[in-house]
Length: 407
Image (cartoon, rainbow, N blue to C red; front, side, top):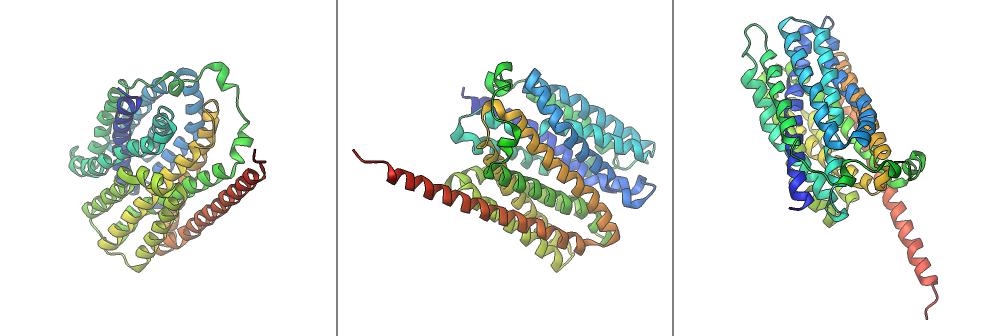
């Protein structure tokens, strides 16, 4: 059995379960926060805590997995997810906003490890299969689009007088299933844990991160994820303000998550056929189309279509950025290169989520969408710059070939 067929489906299962719990949380957390928070502008604070914890965990998680192995790190992290589910359930039952916010920290710590599933898949296969491995792992999110919001709906009133407590009780089971699925992965030695002497070799982080390709990969993934988080976090609050029902909100979030992950069935093929830069340009344009749709109206249809566009745009930018990043480091450099990338991404995501709640409460939905546009423009400009860099490098290479004397 090949490394691809043995490990990638199991990592995709882990991704599906992780994202199912995350989509449930994104569907419900702002509404739970709104009912528990002493100050309504703090409604999205638990989500922000979750993203901050994921950000802060990204570097320690990479360092720990370099020492004990990726598989062992993934299994260890499920302790945080299960503890977060217990804390959230108890907090909702006891109307304790700050404990609910702390549960976001624990779940964010789990996510900080889980965000490396895609890199574990990419590092376990040959170069030509990297984009396909990343896409396949992210396909797991398709199941999340169905499981998360529907699980929230089905379990919303399962505990009397504690709306959504049953939803958070259910994610304890989800995290336990992550442990079971990943217990069966068998990563090759080089992809699980590098030899200690190898990890000391390689270029400095400054040298790796100063490459044009690394810079653009980071900008696109960081700003693309930040914009997605910014608009998505504000959506349940905006739909509640527009007097739409929770079932409508759940349906919109479900379609958004489908938009994020269904393209993974073909994004890897598109990158191989058209090139990573063109795919990411289309992703940024989809993001701009999302903002335009949101500015045109606030019907359920507007929210639905815009959030689907937002999801597809994120997919192209995130898979494209991750693929581009894997081309910038050697195996012995992966820990620091990947850690800086994910730390930067989830720093932006944390900032986006806290500002989304505040801006939505203070200024409204139109300001949210207008504020996101400049970041998408920066993504497009960075891709144009990288394309020119590549063109110049190709010209230099051709010139050198022409200067080689012919025998």
